[in-house]
Structures are given as structure tokens and as C-alpha cells.
Image 1: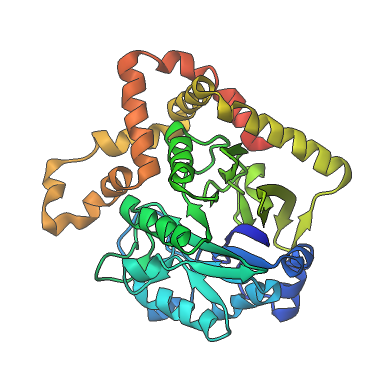
Image 2: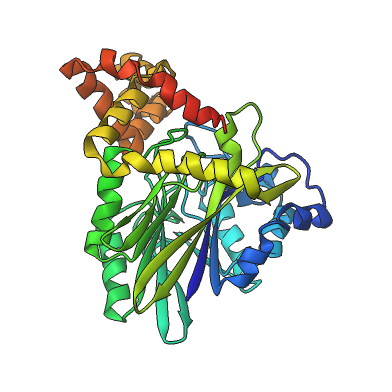
Length: 385
């Protein structure tokens, strides 16, 4: 069985819908890979609908929504499943999220990672071919818009729910594959706890962990025979005034057989006009770049030092200010707005790790040393290929 996984696709900043013909042209370069795969999955990082018909929820960061006609980009790829477990799925409450799910399901697509409650959001996509079965479980970090036991939203990470989903897949002889939306935005390296978590999912029985959310490529590894992809970058997410790494990524192809699971990547770059697979010298340079990103993943001390550098950079100072500017009076129910950023920074697993490491680094006197690696992180963000 051959599976193809793609990262985040979002149309929020594209502007007006360019028409069906342009939508199909945009994905033409990668469409053959989707057609060749037995099954494929893509992550939609905004709901579809009329923005004037819904009120955005109270949250930090932008609320994303696009015209329903943008669905044509996904129809042109014709993936087997569409993931909606991400930090923008519930930006306008569960109503447009569930309406978007219905839009695709009426066209015959499987939608994962979103539902009327947490149990429904954790339902996997089930793929079967030649006696093999795979369960793809879509999960995201706990920011805003996540489902609860009673309310609709995205499939926020729950160790209990994901353990149960992996066990249910194993009980029917299926390969459990976790499709995870999480990590630190803009960081070319996974954090220590991100590596620890994804390896733990493999230890629990996951056949592979395929992740995205950093908005830049991150490395990958084989751990105990299972592929772990820490970040595929964006698939198609035009956004003004961002670093070069925003506009590069790779598709992940998994081959499942009685001998195990193998991994192949297909790198590309994109702009508003299209997604273009890398070939020749461009691919050679990208492969060398990826080798640099993959190299420290197996070295615990190296990854810890790189995460220290990421946390120490002045670009993270906003997180400090959110702590120091908080006033206890904002805990009052009447001032919900004042608690938004703090709630996100403590509730989201990646933000919590960042804050905890910042404070630990300062306490231990490591920040001065960590700052010296900041230029190295920036060079990788700029992707000087």
C-alpha cells in the first residue's frame, strides 16, 4: 500500500478566488503524485464559507476563512482524506468547521480531525488494499477551537484518545499512522519534547508519525523501523513578507508492506501561481539542506542546544512580555480578552514547552551561550540554497 501525505493548504491570504482553471493549474505539478498513490491525505488550514455569516472566536492570532470556491484546489488533487485537525479549524466556532466537513463529505471525501465532539474528531480514515489496512488519525495541539466531550471542534491532542485510537487500529491488524499538526512555527528543528512525544507514539504502536505546522521544512528520521516526519513545511499557503523557508516543503510517501514501512520525500517550492516539484540542482541543494536539518535529530544534546538557541533569540521576546505584562485583575470574567494570550501560551503544548525552557535556561545561566547560535538558526530559516 502506498500513501501520500501533504502538509497545510490555506487560501486565507490569496485574495479573490482566481477561478477553477487557475486552481487546477496551481496544483498541476503535484497532482500526478496524488493520482499515483493508493491513498492520499492533505491538511486544510482554514474553513470554507462566508466570513460575514460567522463571528470569529476570541483567540490570539488571525482567524482564517475562505470562499467555498477554493475547494476546487483540493478537488483537483482528489485526496482520499482531508485533515482538519489544526489551530485554525475552529476560528469561527464549530459551525463553519462542520459545514466545511459536510461540503467535502457530500463529494465523497473522508474528513478527519474534526467533529461534533472529541470522540467523533478522533475517528480515523480507514484505507484498505491488498489485505492491508491503515488507520490515519489526525491530531493537533490544544490552542483554540478544539473539540470537547460535548462540543464540536478539532481533535486536540489527548494522550488517552490517541492511545485508544492506536490500540483500536492494532486490534484489527491495521497500521496506525498519526497525522499531527504541531510544533514551533518557524523553527527548522524539532524541539526535545516534540521528538520525545513522536517517538513515544511509535513506542505505543504507531507505524509512522507525519507532522506539520512549523510553516517551514523540518527533518525526519527512522525510529525503531517507523518513519517520523517532524515537519513537511507548507503545501500551499501564500503569505506576504515571510522568510524563504515558508515557501518550501515536501510531500511524504509511505510504502507499507509485510517488511515494514519505508519513506520517500518529494520536495517542492510554491508561489501563488503554482506548486513546483524540485529537480536537478535545485533538488540537490534542497536534499543537502534537509540532511543538515536531519543530522542533529538523533543527538539529544545537539537538539537541546538548538532549542535553547531558538528560545533565546530576541524574536521570542514577545513571550516574555506576555508573562510580565499580565495583571491579576485580568483573571476576572469581565476581562476575557486579557487572558487570551496567556491561556494560549500555557495551554498549547509547543508554547508551554517554549516558556518552560526559556525560564529554565535563564535560571541555569545558559542564555548567553545559546544566543551565539541564533545566526545559525536564521541562516537556515532564510534557506540560502
